[in-house]
Structure formats: structure tokens, C-alpha cells
Image: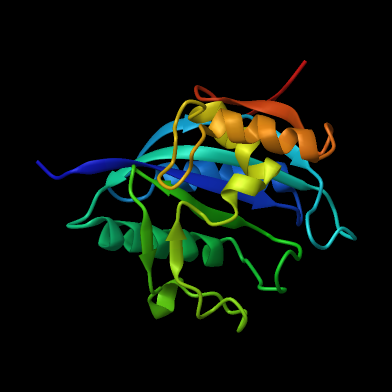
Length: 201
């Protein structure tokens, strides 16, 4: 039987109707070939980072059961190629680092593996500054970004990703002391039966 791993994918959007975009993205991720949707975090409204003169973002994290591949590098690259293909199908335009996004799909975790591998052409960014960067999993910025850590802690609070010396929940609590308390605000939960975001009361 082929080996499987659990992958965590970060979702983000702040162009058009981000709530609807991320709901559609959850469905699209769950519909990928040989992939099973395991969990969906709450939906968060988050302050933009880096370039602050833009609309607030919506962020979430999903857990997927995916093929491990013959080795972690091959498996992670195969998943990354699928994510980039989905981004293109959602009409993503590359406006430079930290800019507005129709959709962002980031590979945050791939099982318990640390991966550092050159990206194939179909998984590279159109941004020349980012194109040569290797795929690094766990995502290199995940540990310091509250908009990643808060939804990630919804689905794997007790996980200690490879290379970390703290759990996801501990990292969330540490960074929450540094950033403004309202920088990441839960606004909805995923209704698995209906397949949509249910606003929080």
C-alpha cells in the first residue's frame, strides 16, 4: 500500500470576494486526485503584513491526506505543483512580495519531514526575486507569522514541526505577545456538511 502523509496548506486572499475564494479553494483542494480533506481551520480576517496599504486578508489552513511519494522531496514537489496549478486556475497574478493576492496556497508542513529542494519550472513564482528560491518545508516564515500560526493551531496545536523547538500552539502564543491582539480575528468556521463558511455568532 502506498505511503501517505498529512500536509498542511495555508490559504490566503484579499482580492474580490476572499471569503468565497477560500471556500472554493477548500473544495478544490479536497478534489485533487488521490487527496482527502482532513480538517479545515476557522476563517480569519488578518491585517496585511509588509505592504500595509491594501485590503485586509482572509486566511485559513487545511489538512490534507496526500501521497508521500517515493521520498519526501518528490512528494512535496508533486503537491506544490498541484497547488501552483490551482493558483493559476483561480486567476492569481503576481504583484510582487506581500502584495494583494487573488489566492495564496502555501505548503506549510509535509508530514514530519524537512524538505529543501529546488523547485521545478512549473512550481516557480513569476516574481524574478522569488523564482530561484528552493521549496522549504516547514515554510520558512510560518513560525513568525501570526496569520499562519493561529489557523495552523486550530488543526495541529500539539504538533512540533521539524526544526522547531516548540509546538504550533506555543509558537502562536509567543508571537501573539509581539503582534497586536486583533491582528488576526476569527470570523467564521467551516461547515463540512454544507461546504461553506458559517459566520461566528
